[in-house]
Image: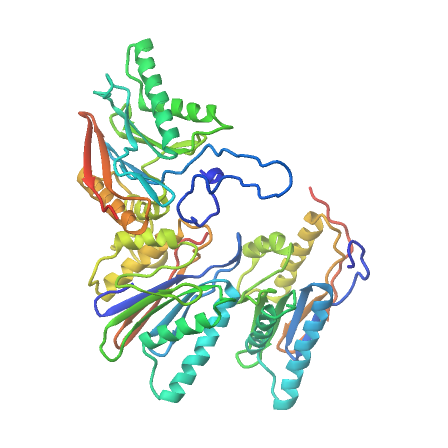
Length: 265
Length: 182
Length: 192
């Protein structure tokens, strides 16, 4: 989905800010200065939806190259709600990639969701918000927000809703999605544990008689534990992921935020 | 071919290595025949010295080793090969796909170059481990028709040889007729 | 992958040229002696060449020493043989798995293409799906798994990892190595 913005296929290490800028080494002609407007700030996000809730999670490390900018730079934002702290919000946006673009995107979406309430006198639904976000991203099709976004909330029926995006606004509602630096580590694990891929009912027969296990919405405690497992695993094997795990759990009661320390090495 | 000019339309790009092993080759003009005949000579020498033929799998191993050695030499051979044979001990036909990097894989069907993109999907669909020669020829016809239909270059037909328990023989293959894309 | 008194090693079966699949029956695990197994990923021609080179070297070792090679000795043989080609390497990243017959302890290790050994207590991954494998192995593996649980763990780790990699898949071979027994299983997996 995001192939447009990924570099060579097997990830080649941390994303550099200025090293990946187009460089001109030709000796002839006047020296030209190039400004590369993007940086990769690393980190990973993850979202899983259940029957009555959605969980979004992200680590809080911000990197550039091999340096750590901050050990607490949240990637999860409440959208809508009241006041500067967005109290009473029912939608959460997670952004990973270029942090500056992520913040700009968050501000834009938040403003638009608030404007919607002032103009229509009601809260925006998640699916409307999801489509709006797609339009915001596609609006910058030729100078994109360098982010992979995941939007979470509850749909009109009160079921968990989760939408994932590529940088130019292609989006899809899913059960679970990992994004960012360690997405390639986390996603196959989620396929296995959430969507029960490659798992068969042990009571069924052999060979062609085998019956695949059918994925069902998981209980909240199970999902929270899966998220923690996914991130502790990613921290072990990816240098851009670590420091802290921020989780936001959206239920009909509202958004509950938790923070768990991760390894700081 | 020499550049864009066709020099000969019906060259036989195969060499018989021993009674029941045949090697087809494509690649860099000079390299192909040089390498194929080097292999042919060595396999024949083995048969003369030992009064026994190498089996196709043994032959494939020898060919691969020679190509792997050439790959890391100063001037490597750029030759892609298909090695077909019949093992008289197990009475089973075998086919080996070998490319110029000396990657070797035993396969049920194979092609090299652009033909891979056109033919492998047809073979995936129609090939079955226990097809008869007639059914095999039918699938081959589907493949050559597809090449005529879809390849932008006008390819000048094929030479067809059959390897089985009796040895190697060339079979007539009607190559006329234009096949047009729908 | 290491378990309790057992180790497992597994590979997929695809051989391809970039996006084109040439063969879907190309095993990448080779056994040397009864217990020592070598997995090779990378350039297909070097996978064949290196596996044959080690077959020759291990056979010579057996003739000289009149005993099977231990996994530790084999690992050092792999390392020094790869480093011999320091400035024109074999383009492979090997993985060794076996059980030492003297002390009955499991042993695994991995290498880069010029022979730097990576000893690990838990698991080693290599190949185009290595990122995915790191994720699944780190998430599923736990210490002291028995042979059957280890088989399930390594199989799930491999299958789910290769399903997220376009360049791997087409079934798998799994070896479960115990002190006096080696079990080889063929997994079908997704055929696409």
